[in-house]
Image 1 (cartoon, one colour):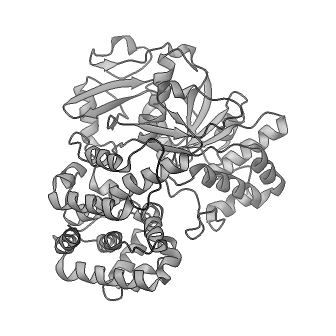
Image 2: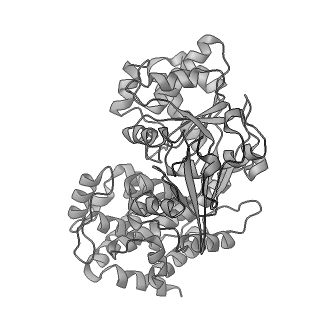
Image 3: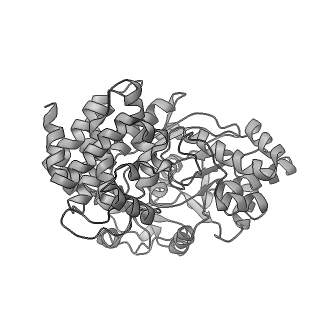
Length: 490
């Protein structure tokens, strides 16, 4: 059965319907980037909140600026903007239909419909999930860089921008001209200080064409920092088939682990949904939560990804069932990551590490190693390299994370350790493969990727340790080198 307004009352008994009258919802949020994570996270929190009879004027209007966003719109248009979420608790799967989205603006060149939607005074929050690599940041400073063709385009054509940030800037300009209060811009991507990064991108794009507008945005628009967390695999044939076992003919089902977390600064001048009533944490120390999550969970994903990819392992659960990979993860987190992570109020970092390992090990979550390996050129400088830098600042080099960097290089060679080809798995794959092949003879070629390593490549000790690690991986194989690391401080 396809989930639609007309069929909600007839859903199978095993599928939970929205616990509220969707016709009473009114839009208050435009969300840009309605992929799996958004629909399993923010949309679920709002669905829970609406079921309490609360904040029903904060429904979601979906939006996007990429071809994939248009495909998502097409997929759920016939479902009255609804989709199903299947929670993968070990031995106890459950399904529900999420009804928090009430519209999805057309995805078009120039983003006119998106700009109009965000200009509507009813919209008081614009939120976004556009991937970690979509913020046009300088790898050395972590701040906005205008050195990109799309940003140059937006500078020349601010009324017909290509980027999400150009569209946000134009909508804010419209509201300013009309005397309408600006919306809050709420980032939901996994980035350190994501509110600040989003501020830099929106203000930075505006400054290219209208410095006065940029100053106004900087002075008047709120960009709260937030930390979001839920493991959400990509949807493929398995997930589509799983939806059918619940009797659902859903064009875009989402599967996810049962755990979810959302931590935010409470900076919403034009109001917000009462999300604290459904488990969202509001705090002025989001930075501590996000550092914990990014270094331990996102960094942990990378630690198991590349050994798993080189071993030809398909699923994350299978990688975690590999005693050596699991021990490698535990050892690096315990020895090198936890000592660098600042204390978090009310959290025990050792307990959090154990929770992460348990979550990674959930056999029901068919997350793929390939997904974890995806986009390393954007993820490594955000999730791994900062920990290495901090370790050097404390005088404690990170041999395990240096080895991980070497394993990533070996993965990008394009062939696993069984001789099987690794299909392109990064927006910069051709460049990475070329560098990885050159680095087999000269490791400094890999460290010359300035967008990843920045000034760390000039650290002679790091460069020497990386060269040894990469040479060792090529000479003896990843298994032997990981075994030495695990045993070194056992």
